[in-house]
Image (spheres, rainbow, N blue to C red):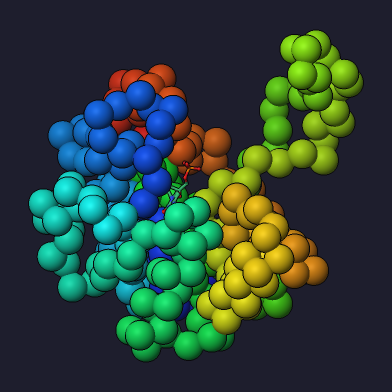
Length: 238
Ligand code: C5P
């Protein structure tokens, strides 16, 4: 079977968060997994991809860890300043990509720094399924557990229909210009966006979900790192 060529793409990795839920002595992307930092594994998901144009990593100005990593000197990986919120960091990353020669029509994939287990098959499926899409979209996973809406008193208010609920993962893939305009618009309107798709939704677009693997997890709590560490065994979980 002949497969269509994958589109060229840029990557923005926002990595300026603190990750307080990990209760660690450093931001979670610098914790060790299989002898290297999480962010190095995350970058590995993209760096040898044949259609990658370049990567920017958004790093907090006073971050003492990033400059000591070997990848900080990799010419394919350019640094952008981190911002106050994730969306500020991503906007800085997009500006850096424009300086590097990206144009408004180019595809950009935004991927969490602490999501090191992205499978190549998921990345390629996202690129392939969205290559001709007018909006773009994201990797996502259908909700598997029964979902409850819970009140402030800790009691169930109702059971939510899970068949229409998906968990939003990354990468999230949009055209540079469209994503920038949506993020700027949402920020100007003081709308709180927690991922790139929310900004596009706010701007009136409908991003497409592409089903991915559930083990593309974002390290958020200590048990997530334990889970990955136990299964890592020298490479991505298969
Ligand atoms: O906190 P959370 O895991 O949701 O953050 C998602 C991603 O956004 C992380 O990679 C984090 O480093 C990044 N981030 C950022 N700038 C901020 C806040 C979060 O780059 N101001």
